[in-house]
Amino acid sequence: KQEVTQIPAALSVPEGENLVLNCSFTDSAIYNLQWFRQDPGKGLTSLLLIQSSQREQTSGRLNASLDKSSGRSTLYIAASQPGDSATYLCAVNLSSSNTGKLIFGQGTTLQVKP
Amino acid sequence: NAGVTQTPKFRILKIGQSMTLQCTQDMNHNYMYWYRQDPGMGLKLIYYSVGAGITDKGEVPNGYNVSRSTTEDFPLRLELAAPSQTSVYFCASSPRQGAKDTQYFGPGTRLTVL
Image (cartoon, rainbow over all chains, first blue to last red):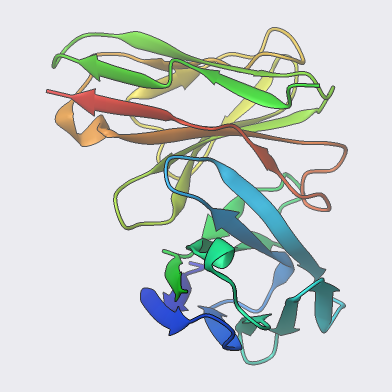
């Protein structure tokens, strides 16, 4: 059974720091991996989607990497800002299914202090 | 283009009551999903649909029912509400092939069962 784990559960950093969020998964047979952002009381917003054949994806100050063989993904946030404060969730899409069913990690809650 | 909308935003139920959570998307997406998110946890899939008239169970379907009579609407029915169903419920949709595309989430419904 696929399990997705995110460590740490919470992280607090001063503004301007570069930081890395970690995501690990137990079954390497994935179709893709996605990183989402969730603001308090809101729904999820997709940040980056990495297909299984890709190693990384970039969007602005965000860079996500994928290492299928080791079952790991990282989300790198450069020059963090208070507006980056949110919960970040990673989710994997199993290759055995084409229906888009996602398996989520528990999330990392990030606080960026001014 | 409103995206994915959910009603109500908040609801308190008594044990044994029933209710329907509404979900509508105006993006003509084929794939739709219902997730629940318990405090401090990631999202878990309840039910999903790959098109009008087609639904299937996810990871945690017990106590819920769904229907998909139109492309736009995907209501979630709770029968005989129990305290274990206290959670935040998210509806999501995806364009063509669920596994290849990101999912677009609604703002959620916060349900408390007392």
